[in-house]
Length: 136
Image (cartoon, rainbow, N blue to C red):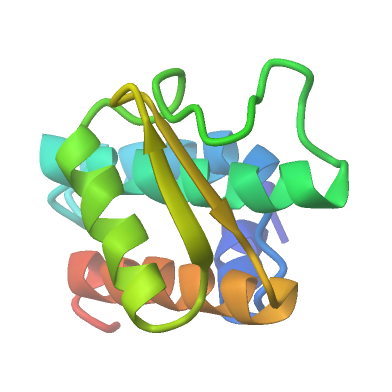
């Protein structure tokens, strides 16, 4: 099984990590070039937001790369409104708590249950992949 195939399995079994995103995006771009999916800029923006979300979990677990900083979405996501939507939705559902916005560039929050948080993000990714691939 190739890395590109395995990355979809990681989404399904809730083991996807932020460092898997380059492989995921490579797979999506390849499938787009092959005409299997229509990958729009908005889709890429959402996957950037999902990557940011998983980076925050990696930070909590101490497994994030050295260039990842708490709450700083600017180096990962390009659309603040999507980051805000995701954070608001997770706060409303109780997936995160103690949300603070700092100078418009930091989204600081507490992750009370790491497995619930990872499952939630992976479910969002899975749903997005399903919409791209037509739930094949």
